[in-house]
Image 1 (cartoon, rainbow over the protein chains, first blue to last red):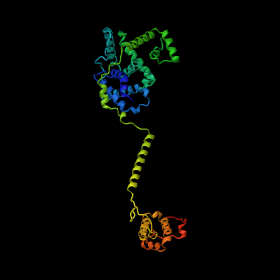
Image 2: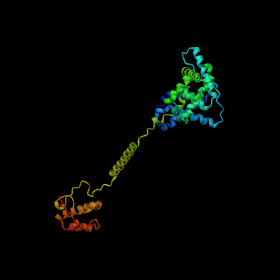
Image 3: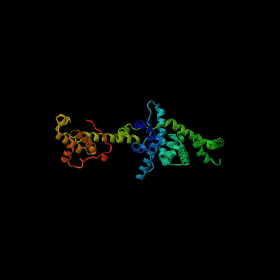
Image 4: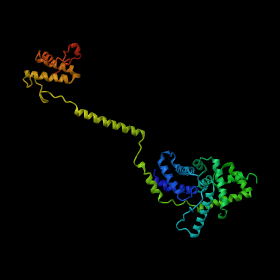
Length: 162
Length: 199
């Protein structure tokens, strides 16, 4: 397996998910790094290569939950904007985008972990409910409810941005 | 309207393309009839559009991959795991090479019997006018018989055939010279398939 290519294709999505879970400083970076190291070490456990994205997200989530368990974790409070400006953007549009990304990050930081996961995987990354169920271990019904509640909370909080 | 909570979950799934069959039809009918739910559905749609348009995955810091690659060099390139059949075949090949080496070593280092008269001495008896004395011939024959006990009986027959042509007493001399069990007289019955040897 060409891990450099796997990293190139999937690290942005995994990083985005980890940023939604752990917006503090470099925690998401550390978790991303650990996710890929662990994936490479246990590559034999990947029986369906076409599901590598779900597999990586599962590892990332488990690492995050392990980190939460190993210390008494306070609800994540956003410290920085996640959104990088794209080269060649209209400055005003870029400002609006950054403003929306920052606001979303703040809202997500106030949600429970299940809703942050549901929002990032289901609404931002558009994974199927089945994939989310496989990553999280939730039932399909739980996936549906968590996505609905996350969506409703974020929509209510960001009404001014919509 | 009654049952809005149920339909709100369904319209979220509708937006994600996860609603099918009767649920899909029922949710659409409800949205057409319920202004409150329709407004919420439109809010959900607006949020989804905003996310799709304005949210991009954050740039991954470029320093991470070199650190990951350092932490875990690509072992697959160095260690190729062979299927079980290939592994068995490799073991057999190694065993065959080892056996060949041992066999060749044994063959090359085996004790080589050398005639007391030298390897090139022609076996021509003195009574035939040759260079080898009868006594020397007997000694040589005795060496052969003791060196190769497996075929000593056959050798004895050769000797007997040969000596009977030249000297009736020679065989007795040989017996006296070497009374070991290897040099035993062979009767007709014991000899079984007696062969005729010509020299």
